[in-house]
Length: 187
Image (cartoon, rainbow, N blue to C red; front, side, top):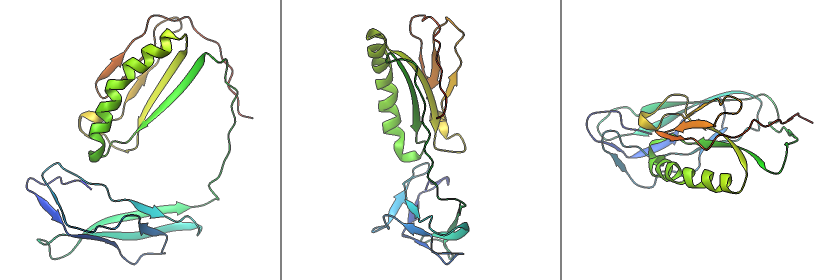
């Protein structure tokens, strides 16, 4: 939850109202009021049971002392299968590594995003020093960009050129590497 207002907002409670099912639950209910400065936020984790097929809708109510009615956050989910799938892939060699970073872009994760941004160049340099061919992808958990920590966008490398990628203002380019051939196929 984030305060997009120009003044502080105090959230005194959160609860899930009656909906189409009881599939949603608050994982960690609020135990004390939270005052949010403009632009500040906090996380409120909602669980989804996934044990009844179909679409599920429930209201998440946020209570504030200055509003006559609670603020509404709609909860929407759908279960249409058992949700378990196993994919197997054959990787090229031991010296090739594909990594996908999934970075939360919620307001409370900024310090961890900054730590990751600081650690990646050293991590990639260590991989290069040890002869590991690393391909990196970065994505976020959000559907829309949030401030300067918007979803990272990997840029494709030309064969024989250096890999490049950018995440939250970080750019990294190793020494040019020869193109690698690899076969990955689902089994």
